[in-house]
Amino acid sequence: MSAQPEVWRVSTPEGVFETNLETLKQWIVEGCVLPTDKVSKGNLSWIDAGRVPKLKGAFNGEVTPAPEPASNSHETFVDSTAALGNPPSHSTTATSRVEPVRVVAPSGTSVCQNHPAAAPEYVCRMCGAVFCKDCPKFTGKVPICPLCGDLCREYRAVTEKAARTALQQSGFGMEDFVRAIRYPLNHKTALFTGALIYGLLLLAGFRGSLIAGVILFGCISHVISQVAWGRLNRSFMPDFSSFSIVDDFIVPIFLGVGIMIVSWGPLIALVIALMFGVLSGGNDVNSSSFGADHVAESTGPSEEDLEVLTDPNADPARLEEANRKLQETRPGAAIAREAEASQAEANDPIGTYRDFLPYLGARLSIAVLLLLFFAWGVFYYPMALTVAGYTQGFGSVINPLVGLDTIHRMGTTYFKAFAMVIVVQVVSLVVSVVVNIVTSPFTLPFMGNLVGGFISASFTFYFNLVVACILGLSLFKSADRLGINVN
Image (tube, rainbow, N blue to C red; front, side, top):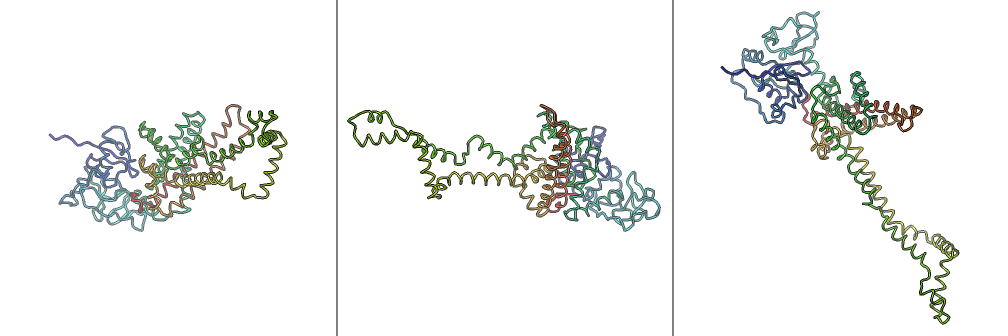
């Protein structure tokens, strides 16, 4: 007696489907199931498909599509579909048991073909006819078109896919900026809960701030990955029901470190080098010259000169030199030297600046480096965040060539998204300053402005979600150039 095949369930935005392991792998290869979709073996708990060891090979391309059978009659298709379950509707191809077929968009009507008063529930993938829930013929749970005999899809899933395709092809512009601003507000409960947790954790010291940063980056990463696939209806809060210390805590920390290294690392390294004196900016040259002048000015009569001054038979030339050194130690002589130096500077101003040029040149070089590294951080940080949120790979994050290649492929779309991100960041800074000024009367000794800090943190949480949505939409609108399967 042969063993029963494993029954797997997969949950996508289009519904819950049942199948076996091999067919599930096939759906993954064909793009029907994404790493963030939930799967369950039998009656076990739901988990992200990308975390299942048996499915990682399919996501990594180690599983190739099975060859199509010689027979692909309508009866064979219906039997296999009834046994294994209908694949998710965001698949771009049919299962391995049939030849790929086209999915026709609904016809120009949004009412049932036979019952105009009934709400549409199904649409034929071949002829595009729309039906209510009572019109299709059912083989098991599989709806069949009564007109052409082909498979019917859920009307809602097909229309959502058509709308997603139209949105993806509409170009990136101000409408997306407005859409990103509204996105967190479409999930008010998640926004309030996330902002509350984030604000409280920031007030809990270093450890609390670390956890708050992990939660914030987890939300940003989740938004970028979901919006990049066109799933704007998904909540931005990660699913903590299947919490993993590695995937949900350790990985975000490493990705955050990678973002700091690739974007702000050069600037941080230069500042540290200046703080610890690794780079002096011309101080050595300048201080040495000033030190020599100081030594020359403070040189007084030596013991030998004093002996000459007290010797009545001393040589007149040596006596004159000793008297000159003695006169230079008097306050009046120092004032006279300063007056002479000032007059010399007035007569020859170029000579003064000539001594300062090496010092000034070194300072200017360091200032230029600081500006360049700061500009790099500002420019590349959004792309580093995008790469981290979409790839979830530390190696990809710290490799600037990955981000630069993505910028090249996205073209003007990234520069538009970058401008939007800058606007959001400036608004966030202004709001934070205004909040701190308004709430300054609530400042407590040794504790600071807790009220202002909490309110500012809440706004920061919201604005970061807006930034993440902007970056996700820019990826979504550039899917054809980046090879992202938005379907």
